[in-house]
Length: 233
Length: 262
Image (cartoon, rainbow over all chains, first blue to last red; front, top):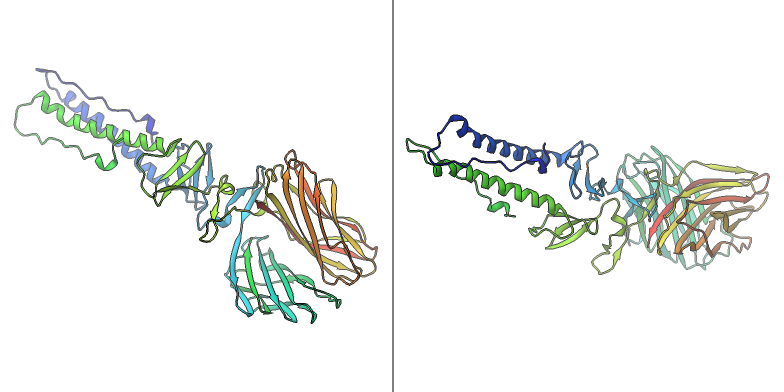
C-alpha cells in the first residue's frame, strides 16, 4: 500500500486545436488516471484490511485505530506507539499505568451485590480464576447472629465457622480466594464483631482448596442477615 | 473537503462515429481528474482530522478523533465527544458512578511494567528466626499525586505456641507498624493503606486480625504518617517477622498490593 501522501494528483493533457491525435496521446491520460484510481483503491483496500490484521498497519499515523487480530484487541496509535483501548471484552487483560511510574494496574471490579437474607451464595462463572494471582474478595455485613460460615467450591464446602458471642450485635466479614495454580487456591476469611470478650479462636482462618477453576464455582456464607459483595481482581 | 456522499461517479463519454474535438477529448479526463482530486481531498482531510487539535467538521456519531492537544482518543456519541479509555489514559478518565453525577477513577491490582502482578501465593516461612515474609518493590512515582494510594493485604499462620511474636510493616527503610501475635494464635491477617499527601509525605494505617485475641494486645491497629520520597526511586513495602520464638514459625501464605486512584 502506498501511503496517502505518495499518491500524486494525476496530470492530464491540455489538447490544442488541430493537434494530431495519436494512440499514445489518447492512452496517456486514461492510463495516468487509472493508475491514480488503482493507487487509491489499493490504499482504501489496505486500510480496510489493516483494520483487522495480525500485524500493525504500515501507514501508522497518530490517531489510527487497529484491531490486532492475533491478540484480539483494539489498539490506538498515540505518541508513536500502539496502546490498547479498553473494550468490554478485553478489560480483563488491560494494563493501566499506576500513577506516574513504570508500574501498571490490572483492573478488577464488582461481580455481584446481594442483599438476600439468611443464605448468600454467589455463582462464579467457569474460568473466572483464569491466571495465577487472580482472586475473589467477598465482603459480608450482618447483625444479631451467632455464627457465620464461609463456603467455597462447586458444591460450596464449609471452610471456616466464625463464632460470635451472644452480646455482639454487628459484624463485618471478609473472605478471599486466590488462585495459586490451575485447580488450586488459597483462602482466608476473617470476622470483626462489635465486641469480642469471650476469647473467640475463630476470628480469622486460612487454608488451601483444590476446586476446578475451569468449572462453575460458588462463593458464599451462610447464617447472615445482611448483605454481601463479591469482586474480582 | 467535500462530503463523501457529494463525490459523484464521474461521467464518461460513449464515443460514436463523430468528429473529434478538443472539448470532447478533454471532457472525460477532466471529469475523472475532478473525481480523483475530490477523493484525495476527502482522504487527506479525513487523515488530518484523525489527529488534530480541533474536532473534525464532519461529525457523525460513531466517529473517532485523536485530539492531539490533549493526546486522547475521542469518540462521538449522542452528538458529543467522549474520551475513550486507552492504556495510558484510562487512569485519568472519570467514569459515571451509577446514574448519578458522581464519578469513579479506575484502580486495581498493582503489576510491573510487563504485567507481572504483585500477588504472592508461594508460602514464605520464618522458623524460629526473624526476616522478611514479603518485599514488594513499588516503582518510583507510583504514588505521584495527592490521592494516589496503595492497599496491601497479607495473611498466614503461626505454628507453635511457645512465645508471642511480632510482625512489622516496613515502608522504605522504616518500620511504620508493629503488630503482635499472642503465643496461642494460629492465624493472622494484616491489611494496610498508604496515601500520598505531598512530596515525601504519606498518611497510612495498618491493622491485623488474629484468630484469637485474648491477651490484651494494644497494637491491633496503627494510624501514622511516613516521609518517604516515592517519586525519586522505587520504594520497598515489606512485611517482616521482627520477633518469633525459637520453637515457633510464621508463614505468609498470600499477599497482594493494589493501587488506589484517588
